[in-house]
Image 1 (tube, rainbow, N blue to C red):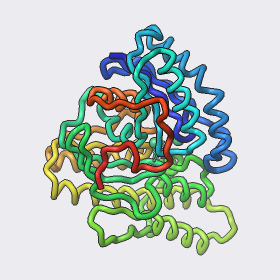
Image 2 (cartoon, protein in one colour):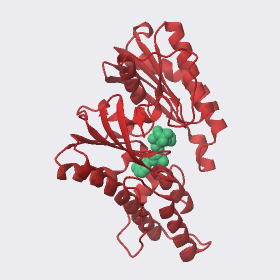
Image 3 (cartoon, rainbow, N blue to C red):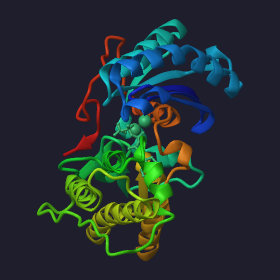
Image 4 (cartoon, rainbow, N blue to C red):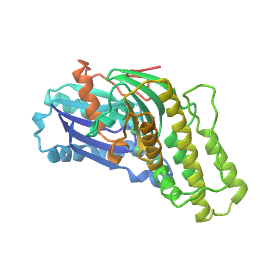
Length: 338
Ligand code: ATP
Ligand code: MG
Ligand code: FE
């Protein structure tokens, strides 16, 4: 079975073709225009998607070496994300599905991330514990099957990726923050600089706005309006990254104590973080379960995961008509139970 996937929820336009679960092509065009603004500008994002979508579709099909009429399903991200951005990909997908006379399957972007581990050679085994850490979401999930996902916890304020992006901006490193913080942290050392993590009453929930505020206070107090020296930047990045990774690992371990699972998966843009991957890998060893984190190209936004999820929904017998519309938030078109 051949599936084309289209992703346009934020600032990456991506098109992929998968065949029987194997990725034949996965093209990602990241929008650089947002860098100068320090964050994604929705209107600019929609326009960039419009420019990129058709050439990417053509190229992805060409690279996959299958013919257009060999495509069995057309799937695209329907939400959550930026409405204008989503509309570009979803509308294109509907038209394409109509012209090919093939089923159109709208996919929930976060469910795309959740099952992205299945794009790897070693697949997660059900039931598995899944930590979703992305730019807009932080979720701890117990995944029983393709269609049964139980939410254990989520962030009560900022998402993990958002915290990386905001802290990066406030110490002057730029956007997107995750890779930059990681790069600086690698040059940093353990010092007296510590950013405390929030202690929450609810067992599996997260909070990252406190860490961000304590970085802000520290920087204001120590440097005021002056430039932060390179060495200090590295040590601040190091301390901040440690705090976030510790906060995430702590909750994962708590869940591993209370839920019996076969695998642990780490997905979403922040899953690219080396320290986080290392910490969760160690945890999986301790609990004698397998650890699956997608290759870096499938951590951030990509259409391969959308195609994969689209195929699963199709195989489950779900049908959608061409009136299907985009949606901004997580709680639609999803099998995640509160
Ligand atoms: P969502 O999936 O919640 O809709 P999104 O699609 O914008 O949000 P992703 O593309 O999945 O988010 O992830 C982007 C985030 O990942 C950004 O916040 C970015 O800073 C973060 N990120 C990328 N690489 C790293 C890294 N090495 N370490 C930490 N964070 C990282
Ligand atoms: Mg992005
Ligand atoms: Fe994402």
